[in-house]
Image (tube, rainbow, N blue to C red; front, side, top):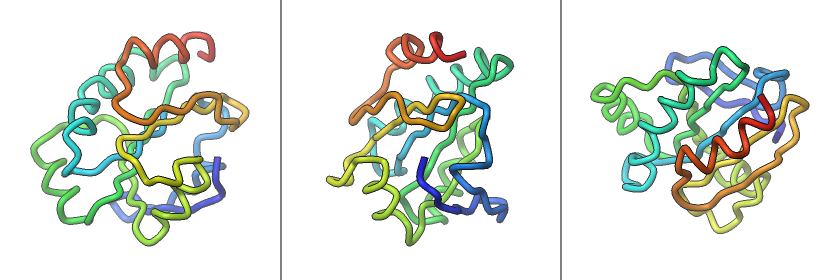
Amino acid sequence: MPKLTLRQLDGWLRELSEEWRGRVLLVNLWATWCLPCRKEIPEFIELQERHGAAGLQVLGIALDEEERVRQYLADHAVNYPILLAGDQSYRLTEELDNPEFLLPFSVIVNRSGRIVFRKTGRLHSAEAESVLLSLL
């Protein structure tokens, strides 16, 4: 995972490479204007509910304006942390091996902090679970 510190909407700063060490991460880069991104969110909510106790942590990283993210989340109950990429968007996408800046984009990270799966485009829960179950 990149050594980047990103801000949550509540103001807390989170270090990506350290904050959730020891957990399996599903990290999703998204934006409010991205229709496939919005379609993934309910499936990620279900994955977090189903596998959170086993060590899964879904993280959403918004590549969007903070106010738009706040408005979207006011209408959608998301049960996982949402971080703001802000001015680190380009560096983040480069370090996650998404230099074209395509959305949605997801990675799955094992408990040791190593990226074991990358997906450009919508990630369906069945596809995510086929990777996650071997890591949890």
